Length: 253
Image 1 (cartoon, rainbow, N blue to C red):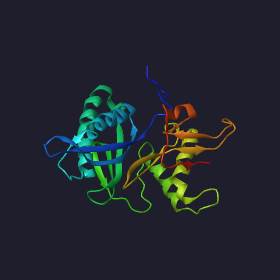
Image 2: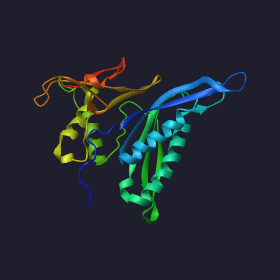
Image 3: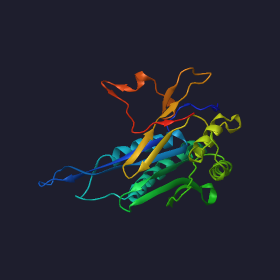
Image 4: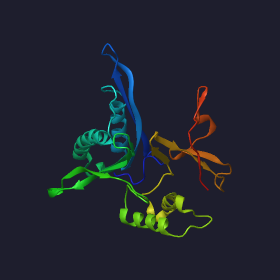
């Protein structure tokens, strides 16, 4: 029997992929802090492939040894992630077939090249119904969009129209992508697009999640904070004597 509804309604789909290198000391032991940075990692499609792949490559990329002064290019990070995911995709595809389909975007500031870059990893259909995981390098410009997920042509058309359309007091152009995605989530005609908004920013300082400050509604009478696509009440924000303290908080009406 096939399951028609999703297993999780609040699955996290956007993460920070942290890179941490250690460099040698005078005695040759790799115990000195080296290059440290983080990039954005977002996926759509098979949750098992997207999340399991992220967890696996994170363990490796967060525990690297490198020469002193080495700056790891984003292209090399993506090359490693692609090799790992391509092998997993092939193995998992033999077991579940089309249910293994997924795509990944890795993006952020590349210190080696000194600019913002994005890479899109997605399945490509080759001859004889054989799928392979392809890679596209993108140098973003103003108004750049990279959409992952179903009904690509329709969604991209709506996003582009919103960005090019006139701004109004209740619909600012800077929030156009968020407005469109929220409309799609709430639209029963797009049943395969669900969950909640998950925001983040990637710059020269790395990748950071953006929690959302959500207003009260008829179904939820008190304002609340949303983080990684789910409400985060006060008790879930505390870890011992520490507390979730993001660098930014975005208001969402």
